[in-house]
Structures are given as structure tokens and as C-alpha cells.
Length: 273
Ligand code: PEP
Ligand code: MN
Image (cartoon, rainbow, N blue to C red; front, side, top):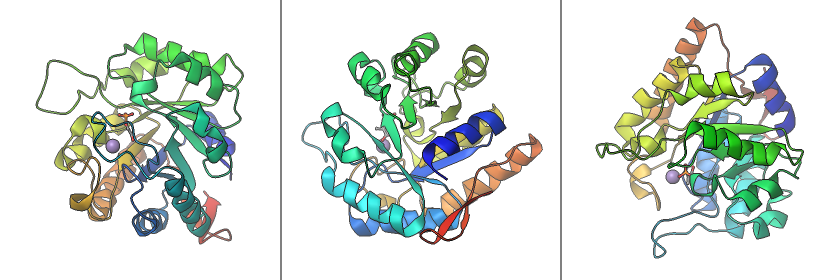
């Protein structure tokens, strides 16, 4: 099943989708470990930044083209599809064959020339809410993509900046029912960036699921303490397993089901039930 088919199932069947993986791709071994674990849990989409939009220019900026190669290896080995952030359209030729879902980060939510360009591509776009954007601005940003022809946009609520400083961002749970009412786009929740700390990730994620989100995008690292970016908020494999179990139980009580990677022919896994 390719990315466009997955997108149709999220929209038409309201299937819940998991996107998980490290904040950044750090080595072939790190991303392969994460991919193998996540595939074994049935997670269909692997995330991992190759080009990182960092606040401090002196901090780790991502492995770039090398990371895309490692993502491609992980995809080949497991059969998972890959989501990674496109920071600059110049990188698009590198993305063409290795990336299934184009992620546009919070800092580029209103980069209109970039939105228009991904609007001319035949790959689903994962658009993260600008942390200074209203819901209305967020939906309008998505329309910059769809009016160019690419109708496959997934919105991500990842928290906004408020006066509250106890968490990294304030997860705006309200945006889930509002976006569902005001747009046709699936809306998923990233609990990792608003949490800022690993122990807050699960409660925020579960709140999102209960509020009707169409999926979760979670930062999961084989050894979070050693992470080169966002070390405090990435959760380990055990925590992710626990989160998934609780998510499945909430989905069950809402009469919903998630899209899962199953053991199959391509790589080790392939079939989505
Ligand atoms: C990310 O998901 O890798 C990321 C950088 O998040 P955001 O754009 O939401 O800050
Ligand atoms: Mn991150």
C-alpha cells in the first residue's frame, strides 16, 4: 500500500494512523533499530528528520542526504513508509524516491511559496501547525497546498506558544473538533513537542485520541538520553508500547480502528489490515 492509498483510508474509513520515530536520524543503526521495533508494533509510518530546523545554528542540523539513505534502508528492510521534513524545496530531488510523506514543519506553516510547490507534487503532505498560528490561519495554509492540485494534506496539532511555560508549548486540544468541523482534512496530534518532557507525552497523546484525532505523531528513540536533538521529550520503546496499548483501548471504545503494518512479503512487513 502506498502513501496515497493510506491517505485515502484515513479519510474515507476514518482509520487512525501512527507515525513514530526519532526526532532526527542520527545513524544507520539508530534509525534501523527504531524502524524494526516500530514495524513489529504495526506502526505504518516512520518519521525521522534529515534536515532539522534548529533554533540555534550551532546545534545538530541533521545528517541531510546521508539520513535520507538510512531512511530508505529502513523502509526497504521493514516495509514502513517514510515521513521527513522538507525545509527547502531545493532538497526535493533527494526526496523524490525515498520519502513517502512530505512533512512541512511548524516554522514553515506559512511559507507560502514552499506550500505552493508541494501542492504541485503527488505525495501526501503532513502540515504542522505554526506555533503562532490560529486555527483559521492553519486551515488557510493547507489550502495553499490543495489549490495547486494536491488534495492530500494531513494537519498536525503540535502545540502553540502561550504565556504558559511549564510545558514547551500548549497543546491546543480544542483545535481537533474545530478543524474536524471547519475542514475536510484529517487532523493528527503530535504530543512530543508540546510536552517537552517524556513523562507528559502519554497524557497529551491520550487526550488527543479521546478528542477525536485521526492519528498520533510521536518521537520515539532507542535511547532518548543519547539523542542529538530533543532528548528530553523522546520516549523509549517500552513507553511507546504502553502508549499504543492505551490508545488502542480508547479507539476501541470510540468504535475506531488503527491502520497497521502486518507481517508480509515486502521487507518483513507489508499488509495493512
Ligand atoms: C519535527 O516534528 O521534527 C519538528 C521539528 O516539529 P515542529 O515543526 O512541530 O517544531
Ligand atoms: Mn523534535
